[in-house]
Image (cartoon, rainbow, N blue to C red; front, side):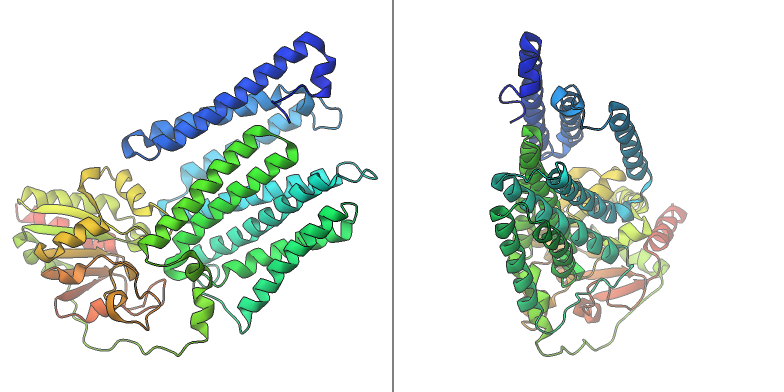
Length: 483
């Protein structure tokens, strides 16, 4: 394995080669340690930026160590260094441009694409390794790890593209199912595993390899289309885990210690995050993955009916001006409206009037893990004003006004009592227990999940229709004009 023993090329170069081997090994170890500590630092908000930088430096060290390895860049069969450098510059440039210019509403889609690129890279590594030496079949062990890299990479690639299409609303965000889908998907999964075993037994059979490759791409589509609505943040975390596992498999294919370590860290952190989010929704991972398929065969639910009260934004000012405590509950609608800065401005106006202001953060609010935290941090909202769901629910009955900004399922009370609801059992933010609830919403639609929210019919709830940013700006204007 590269970095653990003298490779033939390095061994043939004598003492210099041995020294270079040690340098590369130490560089990989240092990079791996920086990854681990960087990941640990990201657990704390105040250290997250430094953790990100530390991990980036670790990756840079690993890239340099790879480029000076004669086994990789000195091999006559490998790409010329100029092409490798060009790939790094072009790829890095596109990544920097995308990360710098994409709006916050597009971050979930960008993360989905990054996951897909990770899967694509692993698939291509496995494919290239399998076909690198025509007429020279790979060993059974290599065929085994190649089959895993191709299978996981293919599922990650097409699954991530479907997730991107749902988030970008290129296709419907609702679950897509058909009769017999669970059995069909299970058959495809078993078929993929059988093909992997057959390829391990008979590595020279290219038909099996390409059948496995095609099946992995189809499987990625079919396991992702049944998921949608409020489950999308879990899907993003899960696909992130898949991309890490795919990278780890690519590391085994290339016998690269750094890829194995980095892939293992990403894969483990992604699956842990997925489990944490499922726990926050009081659901199992299998329910998230297969719940829509089971619900499709169940009875149709009747929509909520009743009277919905609404008022223009200026009429909400007297209520807010008199409030002594206000809780803002942000959701994806805040991201769409880019309202994070004006919501902070309104919070400051309220505090100037002696009001206590808090922000309630549901674990799956938005369309990717930590979406609301990132948005509010961008607006420099102090982190000590952000309250987790369990903590804010304990004090919600004493809150004068709860302002829901573009959130839907995370505040739907039917999750507490309606056993026929798809979100039954999911912990919610209990805004309905506040004395007054204002819901800022563009229209009367059911939102991304397609579930009617019974909160809108409650006697203490009033809708304020329109763009959230304009509504909040109007309220800020009312406070300023009253000074």
